[in-house]
Amino acid sequence: MSDAGTIMFQLPTALREFAQGQENVNVHGQSVGEALQALAAEHPLVGSRIIGPGGELRRHVNLFLGERNVRDLQGLDTRVAAGDTIFIIPAVAGG
Amino acid sequence: MSRTGLPGNGLPSKESPVTLLVGTRKGLFRIESDASRNQWRLEGPFLAGNEILHVAQLSGNPARLLAATNHPIWGAHLFASEDGGRDWQPLEAAPHFPAGSGATGLKAIWFLAPEPEGDGVYAGIDPAGLFYSPDAGLSWASVNGLNEHSTRARWEPARGGFSVHSIRIDPRDKRRMVVAVSAGGVFRSEDGGRVWTPANRGVRAENLPGKYPELGHNVHRVILAPSDPERLYRQCYNGTYRSDDFALTWNEITTGLPSDFGYALAVAPACADTLFQVPESGSHMRAVVDGSLRVFKSRDGGASWCSASQGLPQEHAYVSVLREAMDTDSCAPCGVYFGTTSGHVFASADAADHWQLVSSFLPRVLCVKALDSRLLESHR
Image (cartoon, rainbow over all chains, first blue to last red; front, side, top):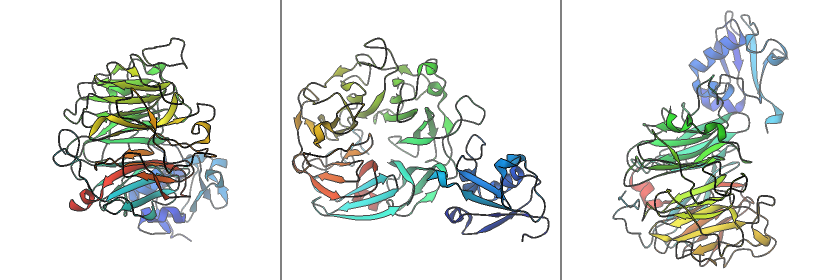
């Protein structure tokens, strides 16, 4: 569980080298998009691998809020609450 | 670098260990020779899992390398190395169009071209764009003179993507440049990239209605002869060409080659008349002609060609050599190197007269760059 008042990102192995080896990063935000912005501000090399230069969620990167893909919710506008965990998971279609 | 573009006094060194940086679909390999260029040792993969589309060596600090990478999930990024290509650090910035502009996204960084001196670097990207970094890749700005060119609506994607590549800079005057757009043709600037003019006079384009259109050509590769920077060569969708006036006009030099299609093209750094090409059977098959892996060599600027293929497989070889997958070194005689789509790397220490296989069964080879090993070490 994340600390109260925070959203926790769980990073896949491939991205941990861009976050000083951390598996989990705690940020603040009220939506998935805000949380991602906070993650990118703290770890820009992670952010640029999740969000493309046009500001879009990369096609083969999935974000799961609990067990639900945020693409099936409201995308980056999906609301998050303190204690939520967002899993960053590469799609199998990517390679 | 000397004004001829050759290291030191402009004359080729007779013997030197060479380091090949071989970019593949699954990472970068270093293949280093002894001084005779007969014994080779492979290290890697570095940047494992990434496609390595291009590697560049900065003029101001030859030990500093930049690599253009792509990953099917995590996208296109730049990495920098300070130790000759073993340890790589990711760069935060990458060349791309701003969000919300007509051409957004960054599909790939195809080409990196350091200026002849200092830390300036140009990058060619997909979607077709030219960008400039004054600080060795730490920041990037659009070269709007090309990216907003009045002819842009007439450019179109080629089969391999929609990219700017083959950025060639006059080593005597960095304001003079040519670039290739696939497919849009070659463009030329004399003023550091503010004004660009199409530079395709004399070049066929059978993908277009007119035989010699002003632009729209599918350019596969353009190279510049360091010993005579007015001399350029280009391999197009239709034919191989030579220019003696920095791309103002072109003359076809395909006669003597077994086809008018191919990607790989390289010139000897010390001799503008000596060049090497790997013809392919055409746009349908995209493999070497007749299953025979042949390098064609010219000693007279393309007026005549001969096969220089001793040591290369001459039957049942259905491979391709991609546009950045062939290079030459600055030794005498000139070393020539290439990698295939089957993951084989070949080397010649005598200007293509004899070849040896120096590595096999690597991932698909995307680029090969030959570096003077001593130059890499001396600047560390």
